[in-house]
Image (tube, rainbow, N blue to C red):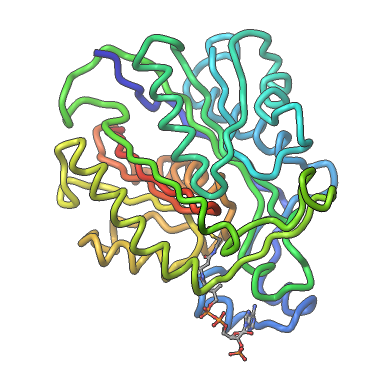
Length: 323
Ligand code: ACO
């Protein structure tokens, strides 16, 4: 049977680094408060012209280089983003054009911070059914363009960036020892809209709007719900937390990540943590973290990697990948 195997990773961060001390000059906050509550020390913020598709294209090109592939080897591009350059066309088509790629299909997928997990799950269905052979799965965001820079309770949390992986359909070993996406579990519940949303859009104010969040409510929901999809993904793949080599969660907040890992019995040293350097980059955070951990030699072929995320909606999910 076909499996979706990761054959390359790439990422791109804006050059501009903004520290907590820099933010303290803008809003009433402090390095201490931000580090203690979130674990964030700095984030990268896009400059004018560094749009989501620009960052996404750079990450995609890096992933292709890493895989030793050319744009014409790809027949599916899925971009997970909530901060597209335009309402339409999709950012994925702009990435496709940016790569100089004129074949295959490209579309965006929107599940906010959980977007990358949803996108990997979607791409996997194309690959295992033979509908596509190689997919670029990109998470790209510029949340700096939707945060309210007057609101200290949210603006300190987010950063910009993009990450990408290349998935290839391969006939491989069956069972949990074989490489590829082993299992995933997705959920959403639209009743929670008001806890995390953007207060604009074509159907409301007609302006882009700003991110609004009830932080404590999100925190409370995050830890419990994520445990359920993770348990489901383990059950579907016939593996357990003990088999895991790396836990690569959405990077929203160090406390949420550690509380989730503790609840699941995942030792701290198996957590890939980048929130300190990147902040919360929404759908980009997982592919950014995957690229960091692969290039620094932590994630290796054969490792069992769990990705998981929760975001606005709420939408949440987890996927297990044998690297
Ligand atoms: N600097 C200094 N003080 C601040 C700041 C700031 N940036 N922001 C809020 N405060 C103050 C508040 O005004 C409040 O003051 P008060 O007690 O005088 O009213 C105090 O700090 C405590 O505020 P809380 O909101 O209770 O702080 P909490 O401990 O809940 O931490 C946080 C806030 C970090 C947002 C936390 O709730 C959290 O992490 N929530 C999860 C949300 C999240 O990670 N969202 C990311 C997007 S969603 C996603 O990616 C899934």
